[in-house]
Length: 186
Image (cartoon, rainbow, N blue to C red):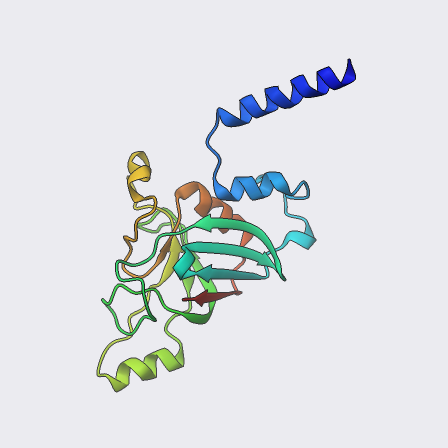
């Protein structure tokens, strides 16, 4: 009898879960019972120590040491391969930077600034007689595009930024503090 109730409960839970779309970050949160609801304060052991981006995999990871706390599918610049060399090349930089400030009034829902260009980036661009650019951000969708969110999924559409959907941007906004290191890999 107890096994029958357990089986019925599991099937009901699967049916309910299948009725709602799940984002990659939600799947990780469900797998980790220590992950608080988004309205709660995160547990100290789950604080984000680093943001890791793997451009080739189109993934952004929120890390606590070596542990992945959240994972997101990302969109990059229209010309995603290689390190950003100059303003307008539509590449996302590669290397070690800092998430140094945020903009709640962004043209792209919300945004968190990446400390590009570094001194090395400036020097490299200047050697070519070019402007390295700036304003590289992690951000959500363009304002007003919420009903068309599906059209951005899986596409590289930014001018060199790292984009996620607005719900995921809310999670990142809440979990990542200013001053957090970000490593962007090819």
